[in-house]
Amino acid sequence: MVPLRGLALARRPSETIPAIGKSPAMVAAEFEKLGIDASTSEITTSACVAGDYLSSKGVEGSYVYVIGEPALMSMLSERAGVRPIGGPDDAGKSKRTLQSEGHSIATLDPPAGDVSAVVVGADGDISYYKVAKAAAYLLGNPRCLFVSTNPDPAYSFAPRAGGTAATLAPAGGVWARCVAMTSGREPDIVCGKPSRSLGKHMLSAYGLDPATTCMVGDRVDTDIEFGRAAGMHTLFVESGTTTAEAAAAAGPEQRPDFIAESIAVLEAALVGEAASD
Amino acid sequence: MVPLRGLALARRPSETIPAIGKSPAMVAAEFEKLGIDASTSEITTSACVAGDYLSSKGVEGSYVYVIGEPALMSMLSERAGVRPIGGPDDAGKSKRTLQSEGHSIATLDPPAGDVSAVVVGADGDISYYKVAKAAAYLLGNPRCLFVSTNPDPAYSFAPRAGGTAATLAPAGGVWARCVAMTSGREPDIVCGKPSRSLGKHMLSAYGLDPATTCMVGDRVDTDIEFGRAAGMHTLFVESGTTTAEAAAAAGPEQRPDFIAESIAVLEAALVGEAASD
Image (tube, rainbow over all chains, first blue to last red; front, side, top):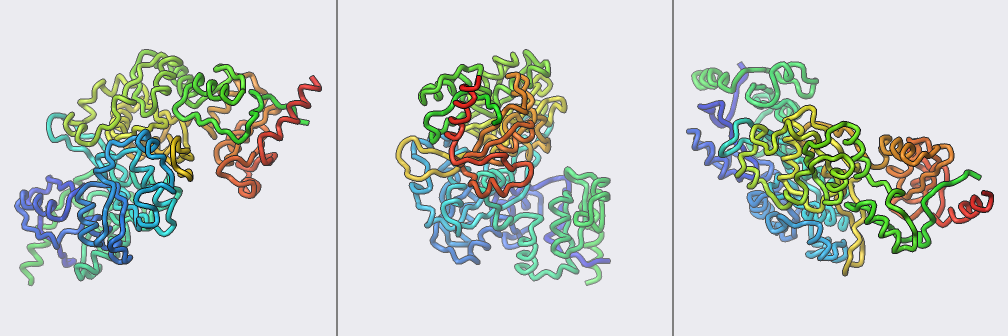
């Protein structure tokens, strides 16, 4: 049996924990609701990786223009000591606002040279103004880093009240694509799955050996590709948008080592491991 | 000499006429300011083509969800007899609005079956809500058409007041890409240059013979590619973002037949044609 390491086994595998726009503390609180004891240090989000990436670039004290939620902005100032601008302040602003400001690279405030990075993540309040400003900072300063927290095009939208069927809504990868198209620049790093940067970060941060680690996920294009790229074992479970048939038919980079109906299959494996300790 | 047909020769070739979000009447008024007499019937915008496309699909009386400016919505109701919804009504709406409505395909209003098309163009008031709603209509009704007015990723933003240097801002192609990523569907038609649909439409609408028509433009990836795809002669002029060197080095699909510094080169040709009539 392959030894497995992991946080803990979800007692109610059908529950999902949407991490969009949430800090590790907020995710830990969601785990607690499911009866799972998790510390914030055991949780890594793409915002954490974005913060660590900026920290490694030595841009402390500089401005960072953010398309994203407040949790992302806090994480950036906390982990990299930068000064996030944009975000909720630029919500609901249209092309008219940009025109009234006489939008140009020369009149940007703060000036392009003072902005070390543009960070683009999930944002429920996207605006024309935000996309144009982000592109202007990238165009106005060739050294300005372009950080995309996630490549995801969409996520299932679970209505909180009313509504009987789910649909899809735009995820952070959509806004990163907007900024890339407008500026003509591609991201310097994509922090979320299936990024190799994230894999390296997690293996090193938690001291994991990929040969004895298993990535569990329900999407082949993010979860399984991520695990394979990092050299981990991979287990596909049928709780999401990818079917087991599609997972079995996936190309070599996205084909899981194991396929199971549910994450519950891990219970026996983890109990077995504990017994043999 | 190749006989040339055209609207009229711009007297001030350095002036540009931004047609974004403008109706033919609005564009004609801009031409008039430059001393050029143009009738609305001589002007075709991507919104006209979008309207004619919907008209050809026999969707009169149905709802059409629009990401775009009021001029696009008017053109669609005028040319195709449809009932445009969305647009300015959904400006500034965030993910919170969507959540408060219990966003799902089952609760869409009007229902997905009553919406025959999603039309996406330039929009200075883009919102999270608009992208999610457009994707939901495409996902909820496989027969719903997906019309993109333009593939353009960006356009030069000319400040109206203040500002010394131009920068770029997101064009309609960016929002079409957002909807495509979120819904997982590609547009059924892209109306603007370099679309073949537009070429066919213009040749037939104006009774033009491509062998005696010259497409003049300052971008190889839209203007020249469009002219070549329609079988027209092509003239590249150096008034835009593409340089003459880049135009000369373009691949076969985007290489112009003629290169000139300015559209003024046409004056001699047109005068010559008039003299030989």
